[in-house]
Image 1 (tube, rainbow, N blue to C red):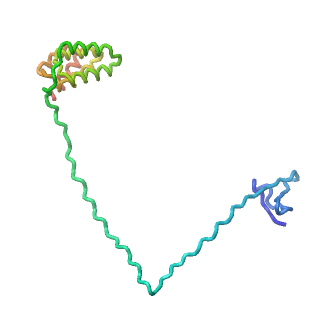
Image 2 (cartoon, rainbow, N blue to C red):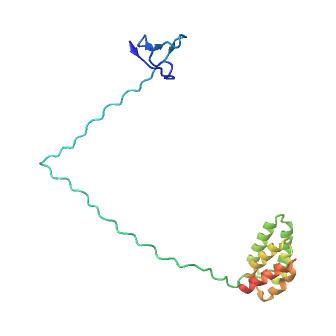
Image 3 (cartoon, one colour):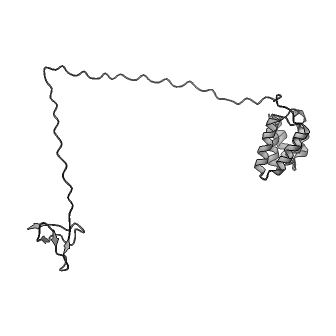
Length: 187
C-alpha cells in the first residue's frame, strides 16, 4: 500500500490511502471514486564530469595578451552654423502679367487656404513677382496672417524690394502691415 496526495486540489485527499498502485484510485468524502492520472517527467540524464588534466610533459598554454584599447579621440567641435541671409535673387525670370493672371485663376480654384498659400509661395519662388503683382496674389488669401507669411517669403525673391512699403493695401488690418515693416527693418 502506498500513500498518495490528490493532484487536483491537494486539500481533500491528503492522508488517504490508495488501494491500487497502478490506477491511483482515491476515495473522496464517501462519494464516487475519483481516478487521477499523474504525468511524471523523466529525469534528465546526468551530466558527464569534466576533469582538467595537466600533463607535465606538455608546455603550458600561453595566456592571451590583453592590451588596452587606445582611447578614441573626440570628434572635432562643430562650429555653430548661422544661416546666412539669402541673397537677393536676380536669376529668376520676371513674371509677365499674363502669368500672374493665370496664377490668380489657379489660386481661386483651390479650396484649401493652406494649399493656396503653398501654391502662391511656390509661384513666387519660380518667378520674380513685382510688388504690384504681390498685392494681387495676397488679395486671394483670406487671412492677414497668411498674407503676412506670403509677403515675408516673397521678400527674398522680389526684384523691387524698395517698393515694399506700398504693400499696405494688401492687408485688411494695420497690424499685419506693421508686422511686415518691422520684419523688413530687422532683416
